[in-house]
Amino acid sequence: MSRLNLILMLAVLGSGLLMVRSAYEARRLFTEIDRAQAEARRLDADLQRLQAERQAQATNLRVEKVARERLHMRAITPAISQQASLHMDASASGAAR
Image (tube, rainbow, N blue to C red; front, side, top):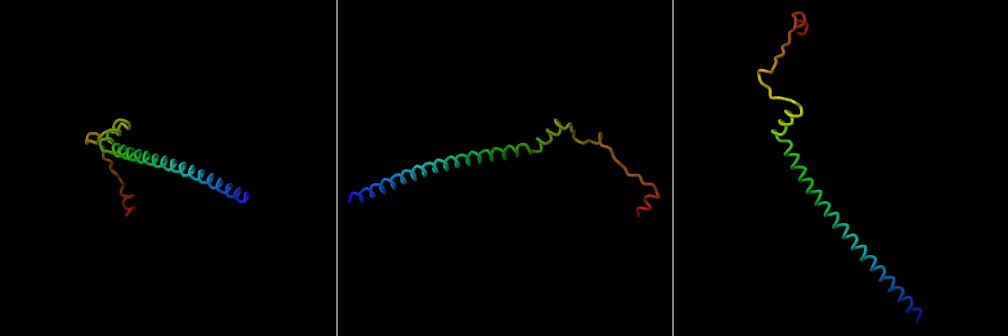
């Protein structure tokens, strides 16, 4: 009878240890899920902020300002435009036809 009691006591002790271990593992996994969800919320907020910044940078006024300041471009006017013409001699135009 004492041998049966010893076996039952070891089984109860083993199952108790397994239960404590599984509870610890469940808490650890829950904490990890919570951290991952917080990271996902932070990344989503960053994505929305970056999309708003991209839209602000792509406005026509912003592009025109960057073209003027960084690329030293200016608006086209008739005073600075040049017309290119194509001159072909008679023999070349006849051969092209």
